[in-house]
Image 1: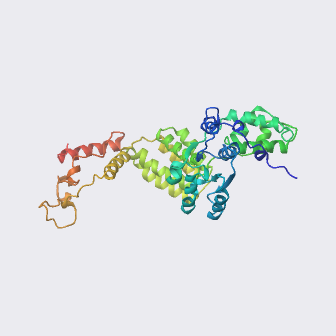
Image 2: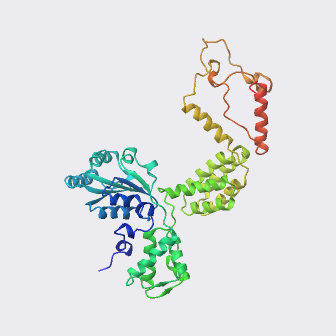
Image 3: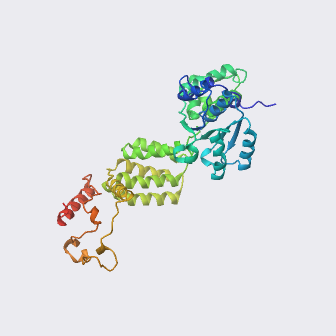
Length: 412
């Protein structure tokens, strides 16, 4: 009979066996303290894949001696949940809910009273940030904890311990560089790293494995680029911040990571935002360049689109920057959201004016197409949302015209 995968057999059974997460399971960790006090609250654990969320939940069940059930919020049904709760009514249970961010409202509504009554202690598992993705009703009934990425050295030490514990399975001898390669290729995911370690010994039992041999076997790193996970948005954020910071090499690095998953639409959306938010009026020619870039990329697709994207990203990263348009609209929105709207002056709306004899003055009938009249509601007449900057030639010209208009219309 074939053995179960090593990652399954080697799954920790106590807090002491868990790799990393000392802020939760270490001597001063909150979960360890809960165990010492024999008091377990409902929890939501979130973080990248392969760093121990489900393992910690299972260990909690063992440590507290609870009957443990698992439920996948994405695929399991309300009937399955009802069956679990029926079994738990007399003695209580731990319910581990995978993908808790996908829980449907009817299932949530059925579950929550049992969580509040203590019939069920819930541990939700998600790779998403629960403050953004998990329903507030669920989140308010649980303590939320984030798992940290596993440090490379901690994971390497764990792999070496496994070689001692499972020496009959792991007979290959690895160069030190191979451990680092395994960790890098696995994106510091425990499960993936163990699977790769097992693969090397399975394919070359008893042999000495060099880095070159390991690369031939493992071949390609697993890219941590799942769009449903925080990491994907972290890369997009790093991509935008690198362009904003004018670091062309960092910008190209994060572009390459996004290209690796071939999500062209997301890249183009983010580049369009960057063009208007971060380059803005300092170099408005990038607006039309960005449209041309998007059209060309959609026309040719990958892999050729990578060249077009590279040219655009280099241009954006090295371009002068201005965020005046971004700041101006956010300032205006802040007033609107605060209720500072007031009544529109009668002379600029198309209604018969019974309240005042002011007439709308048609600017094109006046010199320089300018005429002094009020457009903002009277309560906001002195408000200024746009603050011009002399970043480069174009915005300097805008600033000059802005100040001229203010002066001509006696607004300054």
